[in-house]
Amino acid sequence: MTSSAARLRNDVANLFKTSCHPDIVLPSDGPQDLTTITLHLLGPASTPYSEGAWKLTLKIPVEYPNSPPKAYFETKIFHPNVAVSTGEVCVDTLKRDWSPNVDLRHVLLVVRCLLIEPNPESALNEEAGKLLLENFADFERMARLMTSVHALKRSAFASAIASAEFSSSTDNTDENGNTPTIYSDSETDSGRSSTTNVLDAKNVLRPLEHTQRGSSAATPSSQSKPSLKSKDAKPKKKVGIKRL
Image (tube, rainbow, N blue to C red; front, side, top):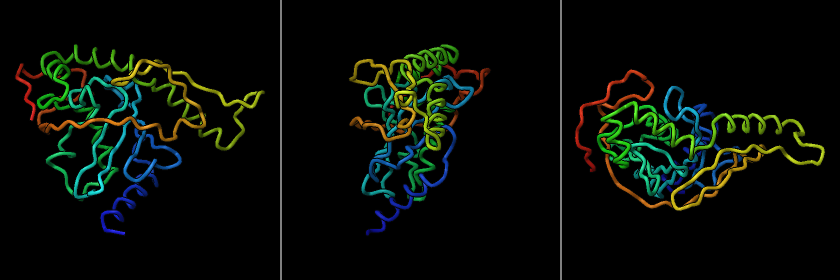
């Protein structure tokens, strides 16, 4: 086994060994394979994303850790640093600031933090970046609206997790032997029609089918990022959106 393969195997094992963060929900039976990890990211509290849950996929290259993984939102999200067409996440940690010392746990924490402090100055979603710079209140309203339309309901998702944990130690079935299901609002991804998601309480944490995404390259600035946690945050003066 090469040193790169050993490092990848070790990082994946460590990621699944202990909880990364309560908002980062990994599949209970491990990854699909060592180069593709599909999970759920719950929106951080006190942000426009707080009521939603999103499918997120990490694609890890064979050159890892010398080359960074790529992160993709499989569920649509209104965010300056998430490409509209592909769902790719653009953040310095996965671009110019990448270091082989960064592990997968840290990568997921960085993506979560991006929902708290987006960087509008190097936006992949120009509409979201411009709105965040010019009118913070309008950006929050749009982000909440898009969350309510496309994301899984966080409350329903949390209930499904609780049911899954309960059913792992008890027979949580009805009189016909069926497992209860939880229905969420419709979820729409790029290139797919709107459908109603049904979360099986026993399988909610299992890996979900990966949708192949394209690639988009851009490098955001890591400074002067407005925090979505602050309701009184002042928007910056109108400036142009640059794409690197």
